[in-house]
Each structure stands twice: as structure tokens, then as C-alpha cells.
Amino acid sequence: MWSAGLFSTAAILSCFVSLGCSTTVTYDFNITWVTSNPDGVYERSTIGINGQWPLPAIRVSVGDQVVVNVMNQLGNESTSLHFHGIYLNGSTEMDGTAGVSQCAIPPGASMTYNFKVYQPGTYWYHSHAMGQYPDGLRGPFIVQDPASPFVDLYDEEIVLTLSDWYHESMAVLVPSFINIANPSGAEPIPDAALINDAQNVSLLVKPGKTYMIRIINMGAFVGQYLWFEDHSMSIIEVDGVYTEPAETEMLYLSAAQRYSVLLTTKNDTSSNFAFVGSMDQVMFDHVPLGLNPNATGWLVYDESEELPPPVLLEDFYPFDDFNLVPYDREALFENVDHSITLNFMMGNLDDGAN
Image 1 (tube, rainbow, N blue to C red):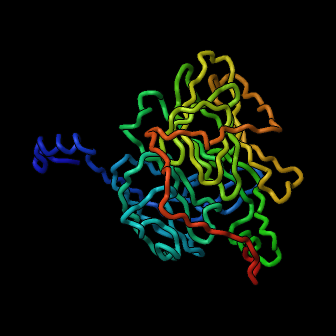
Image 2: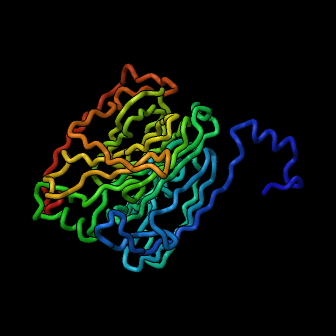
Image 3: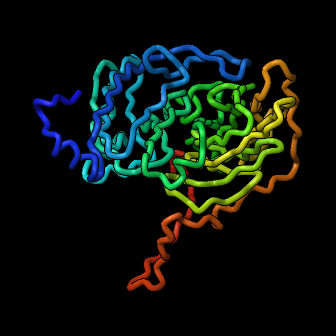
């Protein structure tokens, strides 16, 4: 709290007239194992925070100082936290990439992440150690922007996460993936798709309102299609960059990709509407018999009305994000002084890694 005895009125006014005063936002994260069963099929050990899973969202505003105190009480695994999409210019040691910008946090140890956020938009945080985050250590990181060009165009905000889900732990799956017995590099196939780390999610909505929906694919591997039946979306942000509004009926989100969209609800409240996150099965080496690639949720206008089953699609026509236009209209470079070409080849190492 500020005290009138510490800040003059002129200083406070000057602070708000400029870029705004920084607030320090602090989170205390005790990382432990918990038990979860998000698809209702298989109960497994999952990495939780403060004894809970799904994990809490980190919510800050542009210009805030973010402090995340992490205690690793997993007991059998080291960990770290990476803040995906946050630039961290001048504070690389806070990036959380174990073995690159920091040592992993061993069991029983702690670390404080302390950095300032200058970018608005939709991001996420996750472990960056040993392929660990598909075991559950991932959550939304939301940066509010009072100066957003769209701030007056919506009534409420919703965060919607998509993810793939594995019944087996990464401690088992990663060694079998990077293995001489898997020379093609075929990725482990998920057991389920999740929405908000669950299935059969209900989003209560009000008629005639516009919602900004922040959508994050927190999956390990699979891209996902997303659509809301009988509703359209207007894209206004992708990966932290504001865009000129672009209308679409369907999105495709690669793993780690984020969108913000505006969705306006109907005035009629007599029906509820399904929405679907559907895993891109083209990415699978094979499709296991009985796999359900979809996770379903509902826009609930009236809780007394039925939740209709979704219409399942065979063909997908998502918005092509190459057609997005940045809101600031920053021009592409027309000429370059020197061009560098990198050629990559995927081969197998002696230990089967590729």
C-alpha cells in the first residue's frame, strides 16, 4: 500500500500519467505430487501446486513485477518454471530452461523467479525440465492490458485451455520415445484430450454478451482444432500480438500456441451449445482403436436445458493464421543485407535419439 507520507500527490499523478506504476505480484508455489483423473478413465500421480491440480493461473498487468517463490517438494524429481512467450530481456536467468539458463531445482530446494512483464497478452507457464510438464506442471499466465484496443468491446473474460493427456508418466514415456527401438521418432500417442484440464466442461454464459476467450494449447505434442457450434469467433490476439479482428468458425492451435477471440452470445436462452477441442490425428504415427480424439464442453445459457451432443466432423477448415494482420500494421522487411540459410536433417544417433 502507498502512504501519503511517502509519495507526494504530484509524484503519484506523474506515475499514472506515464506508463503506470508497477505493482509487485507474488505467488508462492509448493510443487508436490497429487492424484488426478481428468478424463475419468485412469487415476495417476500428477504434479500439483499447493496440493491442488489443475494449477492456478498467474494473473498480472503490463508493467508489473512478478515474483514466484518455488519450493520443490516432489521428492524424486528436479524441476523448473518457464514462462512461455515472455521475453525476459535483461533477466535471462529467470527463463526457467533447466540446463540452459538455470540449474534445475532439486528436490527439497527452492528458487525465486523475479522479473518484470512488459508485454500484454495470453501466455502460459510450465516446467522446462526432463519433458516434465505433461505430468501436469503447466498453467495459464495472463497479462492484462488496460490500454488494449479491444478493452471496450467485451463484457467478460474466459480462459480456456486445451491439452493432450497421457496415462503414463513422462519418466516412462520419454526414455521409450528417445530410444534405439523407436528409430522413426514416433511420438507417444495421447490417451485423451482435455479442456481446462477436464472433460465435459460447462461455461455459464449470459445472453447478448461479448466474451473475450483466451485460448491456450498447453499440450505436449498434438495440435488441436476448436469450434463453438452455431457461434463465430473474432480473432484479436495471437501469441501476445494484437491483430486486426478476423472472423472465423474454427481455430487450429499448435502445441504452445495461444489465441484471444471475441465471441458474442445469442439473445435466445432456450438452447445450450457444444464446443469441441479435437486432436489432430494426422500427427499420430497410428490411431489406436477406440481413441476418442475429442473433448467436449458447452456454452450453457440455461442450466435447466439439456446439453446436446456435439456434431462430429470429418473435415476441418480452420482459419489460416498467415492471413492475420498485426494491429499496429508494422511492415515486413522489404530487403535484407545478408541472408543465412540453415539446412536441417533428422537422423538417428547411436542411442536412438533423433
